[in-house]
Image 1 (spheres, rainbow, N blue to C red):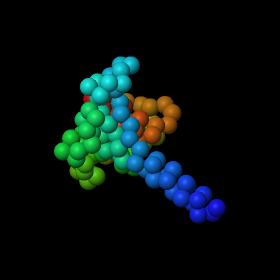
Image 2: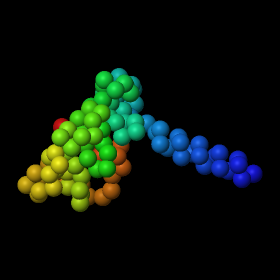
Image 3: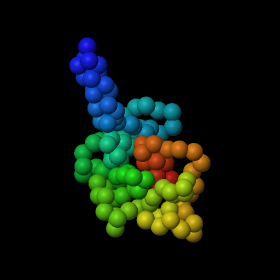
Image 4: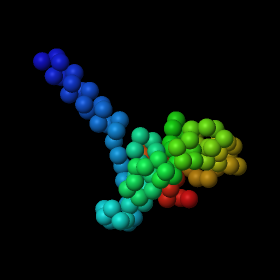
Length: 115
């Protein structure tokens, strides 16, 4: 019984880690209207999950170019509800402010929509 419970918990966690989110235009859910797909912190064009189609990667509140996670490739970062350019945390570099909590997928979608 314990092993079945362990396997069930493992499968739930594994499926969550591999979760995929797709963001669509307007109220559509047609694949042709997909703006981006987010999987494992990487944002891809449309419904693609190919690394060559990676728009950006979101890791630890920072948004990077393509699949990179180097600080020199930082496009923006989220800290204290403020999204700033690159690795900056200065209020003068704030692109926008977010009230409330966002998941990685939500942050990626907001970034794509506002750019």
